[in-house]
Length: 327
Ligand code: AMP
Ligand code: MG
Image (cartoon, rainbow, N blue to C red; front, side, top):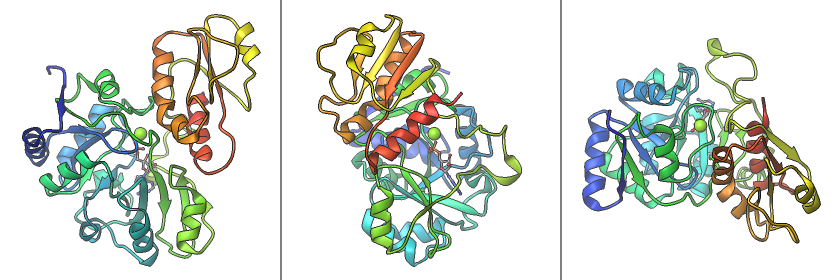
């Protein structure tokens, strides 16, 4: 296959990509969280191509993206808690787990009776969803297990030989995958993956506690234990620190990289970087995957990273860092 074309979001390109999606092809799409690898969610054969392109185990379910609330009942069985969260946070980086409608093929939910649904806010992705006229299933557009992509170039580097079309929507605004909450039981919601919509925001919207649940692949499908814990990983070993002193980096070996939350004072070097000049968490989240990818490509022996502090978005950042560091 020729390598993928990166397309800008002109009306002509969007119409072309919508046709390709309806014809059962894959298109990599920008979202506000990370880039996704999209296919018609109602077409089992198209969705199987996602697993093949990513090398993703068939037990790991996909997220279904919709562009209007009216589409929710076509793919899932909503309840009051789901409607409340949808009204408050959609379009946005929140994925709801609900009972699945039969129209969604088993390959999308990895055989589970539940389905993951989200309404994204990215302007181009929304237009493409509307033009395609079908819900789109999309996991992150990276080879299974590697760091999620936050630019069209990241997608090209990982999947350029496996797919034909990448829609370029610029760097992702949030930079971390969506918050996932299981609301099948409206009185006992479970947080399955932390993201930019925080537990506190969910609790305020629902008026009840949101406990942590376990993310899982399909039941008969448990891969090797701990499989899903290791995710989002660069090839280079990642070492986490609750805080990093500039002098640790200044005196450290030159073949190891040091990643600070904020710009460190008094040290500089090619192997020393920071995620946000002032250490603001939204900037840290936005740049995290790009910095991990860049340092991974430079072949350092180890990458040292400072963990984020505080709750909320820091929980999501640290969740991804722990997965990147898991061996
Ligand atoms: P990705 O978009 O690559 O982060 O992958 C989507 C993730 O959504 C999966 O790895 C699961 O963690 C989660 N997910 C999708 N469908 C379900 C479901 N029915 N139940 C629980 N988690 C799900
Ligand atoms: Mg992923």
